[in-house]
Length: 356
Ligand code: SAH
Ligand code: SF4
Image (tube, rainbow, N blue to C red; front, side):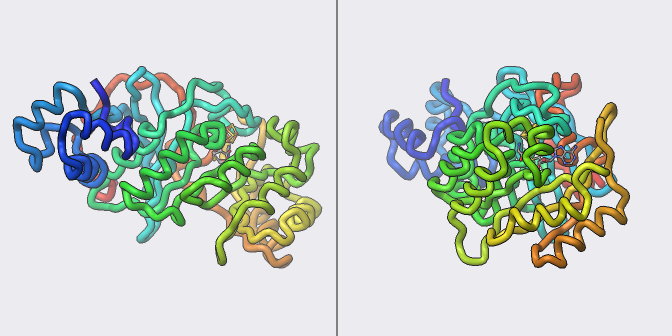
């Protein structure tokens, strides 16, 4: 039995041909799976009953299982989805005015071991397959209809560039089948330099975000082991090589840790690094969790840091971390945690708004 969602577009076309069916059946299947978000072949009433039965003998539509759903006071929502092999993955929905962003996970857990990140704590479990990434979007869209998803960020659990082939295939399907513009898709990396170059050569091209977090190798290596292999200079060179279309910028993420990387000297160094790169700096005050060894700077310090950067000509915004109360904010996703006990039916279509 084949899960139709696990097939790339050409593979699905091959499958349809192998059954001796005309090519337009492929288009119908794609439309029902990705645009109408059908949960089963039985729902595809456009297909004659006999054909649905014939298809059901060879194939099915696999779906993520919704295991848990929490809603933050600020409107962000966190979903825990069960996968076929019993693993689970988290996805976050962030409504902001007319924009609705989904933050997807690319791996179960993460192997990069950044010192400040809760995701890294649980270790690495496995890569997600392309359809498991895309399915997070399909499932959240379904749960939140009629709200339409406008933006995708690969900022959930995992290091997307360590699972690049699946991430690229997922981006292709989000773009081509879910009709989300590639300009509204952002892949975030901790700085795996050779893979940034590979991503640069891939189609469709997407926005790049780099989790910089420190302006010296000494501190960055302490915070992010990846820096020992690919130090700041090589990372910044890869960013300079990254092909940008006119008016596009690379996003740099910089967590502010109290007393560690939030001084005037740090701001100056940071500006020095980014000089000449079309960039936008996202400042993320550290999101604490139980047992964290870092502190979040006071709001005044955060604003002062932003102003120091802005006054030197670089766009810097303080990113409001959404969903902190439900541990859905940056770095608070656990990933790979064992699923909770009460599965909720996926066909439930409560609107996020109504649920608030
Ligand atoms: N692995 C990729 C994608 C995850 S993005 C990457 O690291 O870029 C998750 C973002 O949250 C990263 O920018 C990371 O630096 C940030 N982050 C991790 N832990 C955090 C914490 N406790 N508080 C604030 N931001 C955090
Ligand atoms: Fe992994 Fe990113 Fe967390 Fe580092 S910050 S451990 S790369 S998810």
